[in-house]
Image (cartoon, rainbow, N blue to C red; front, side):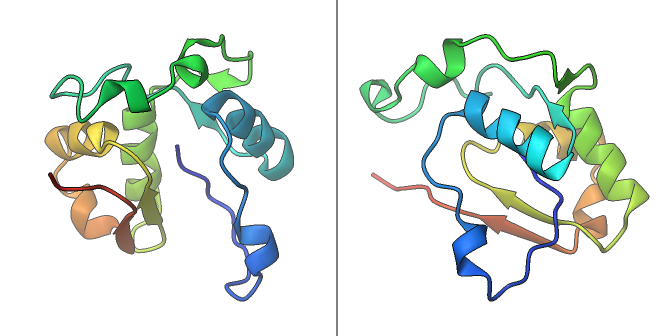
Length: 124
């Protein structure tokens, strides 16, 4: 999920939303920031990863509200980056499936991003 909203860097109170599920955060982003919310890939390109019991299914099985755009997140990512070269910082919080698909379809988006930040991950 991506959010395009300028927040002052020193505003730590408003930069953290907390640990919430994707349905709640998408509703919040749509209302509070007036951003487009798009549905992404339904599963990882590599299938399940790590210990699946650590991934509760509640957030992924609830029906999303009508505010979800018809455009797929991969198409939206490519379009937004290419329409705003050098302006978008992409922060990836989970599996990189949508980014991988976007790079496969349009490798030049890598040069049009301002920065790419990958948060998390682990190695066993």
